[in-house]
Length: 224
Image 1 (tube, rainbow, N blue to C red):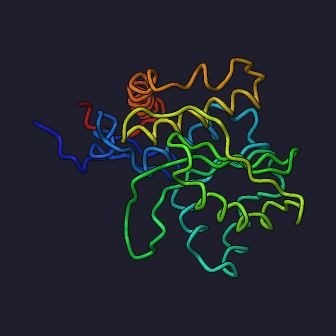
Image 2 (image 1 turned 90 degrees about the horizontal axis):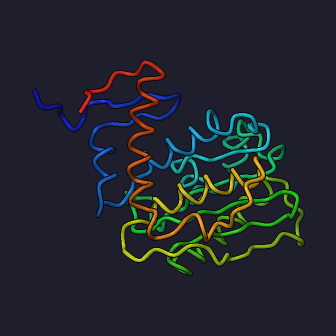
């Protein structure tokens, strides 16, 4: 019997992945917040759990709230994340700036590095999300305890996509690479490991990771 697209493939901490989400890993689909959120949660809680005290990979839903919510509401909302204690804070940003609308058309990655007191923006379609990312950085500044007046925002010369649908995959791959670099001393450059040519492989590996995690954590999934 064919499984329904609403069937749950994986339940992992706060992530709930359905078959309809997994289907998005087939090109030319645009990855949604559920897939990016799972990868971020897996990196923090499993893949790089040896550095959990340093890392915070914020769920895209939370990032969207930070971006659109009134400033006065952010303090109590962000307090459980313990951002002032984290050395590296990752946020996946989309270009939807309308609180009444769902979705968007582009993802990029924002990283705060405490030791350098700077936000770095990695955009696989250079410049597309720059203004959105900069506004988010300054909105987040007091909540990561970045020094006023000295914080920097840098648009990075990162890997670039060659199509209109791989931006989310670039966000996942870039975040993973940077976690390896900062937490494990990985020394190969970002632009050598995250390229347009490796995105299809990353889609396949992300699908494999979802099913492997489902098996490991005893989640119920349809199996096809």
